[in-house]
Each structure stands twice: as structure tokens, then as C-alpha cells.
Image (tube, rainbow, N blue to C red):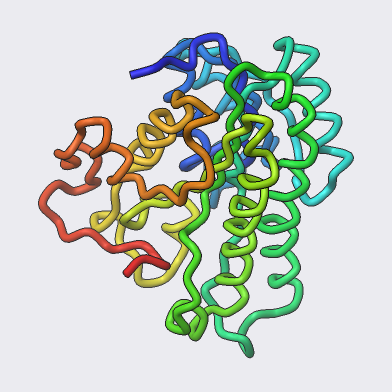
Length: 272
């Protein structure tokens, strides 16, 4: 297994959930992590702030830079990227993790919610990638990793939540396009998606999802680590699934990632 020791990661939405799990896995190697997220004050519904995340990262062995960033605003991303590069001497990795969700039909999706999903998921992913690429192009083994699903035009993924599907696929289309655009420059651009639903605070707020049927965020974090330590010139344009990445690393027993070992697992969206 490779190491992220000394690497600098800029992770959107890293104050909790999968973003924080990826940050903590990198921190265990001794990485620098930029916690770029909106939450600076505690929220009883969604635990975790940029400051609590930073403390956890440093306790795990890394260095942290907590920055309050709303990725819908490109000037905030630009300022955060400049501060990160100034603090750590460069940026090696961007993880586009921040995402908004609403599993609602067309008539049940207020335009305010539509705009939030497109602002965070599509615009935010594009804007963060655009802002960080000048730094990544100077890095030794640069990666962009986006938490988004494999692309599919099967109508079943659109029928129940058209707006959310378009917003997540917009993230995946950024991966598809930027991987090709920056292939010759050696910037790896890949997507990662979990095979099963992951137990996060955001998922807990969705009706019909029980945590016992989920895996822990650490399964995605370990898969992300495996991808981000690969040669960027030899690993780009992929739509990875967490279990397949881990299997390639020789990890086939995933029982330790289960919230409730033995309980049936809920498959994630967009996967047949």
C-alpha cells in the first residue's frame, strides 16, 4: 500500500461523514488536510464542524487547516485554495465530496432545492476542480477524486428523483470530461461510489433507511486511499466502486465495515 505522508488534500464537505472518513485515513499516513466545509458552528441535526474535524485529523496524526467554504461561491474556493497552498506549500489532491440530496419527484422538488443540488453538486464540483487545477498541475502525483456514480441512461434512475440524478450525474460528467482533458498533463480524475448505502448523518435523515443495513464511511475512505496512492498517469477516467477497489488491493472480507455484521445491506442508488 502506498502512503499519503506529506501530501496535501483539499476535501470539500470534510466536516463529517465520508469526507471526514477520507480525511482521517489520510491523516493516519501523516497527510495535510484542508477541511473545506460550510459548518463552523455546531448543528444538533448534523454533528461535526470544520473545527471538530480538524481536531480529529490532528489526533489521527495529520495536520489540518479548517476553512469555512461554501463551494457554490468560486471566490471562497479560490481564497481557500490560496490559503492552503500558502500553508502547506502546494496541493496534491482534491476530493469533491460535498453534495446535496433530495430524493423527490419533479412535482415535489422546490426550485430552491433544485438550485441547491445543482449549485453544490454540479457547479461546486466544477468550480472546485477549476480552482484547484493550477495547483494540482504543479504536484508530483496529482489526483481529483469525486464522490459520484457510474453514468447510466437507464430510465429507472431518473423516474423517482430526476433532479437528484441529474445533479449527481453532472458530477460524474465532470469526471468524464476532465479526465480526458487533463490526461496528457498527468492529473488523475476519477469517481468513487459505494456499493451499499453508507451510514452518515445525512442518510439518517432520509425516510426508510436504517443504519443497521449500511456500511461505515471507512469502507469508502479505504478505497479512496487506495486510489489516491496510485500513479496518476496510469489511473484516470475510472468510475470506481468501493468494494472492487478493495478487492484489487486483496481485501475481500468487508464484514468489519458493516454497521451491524450479518444484517442485510442496502444497495446504493445507480447500481444494478
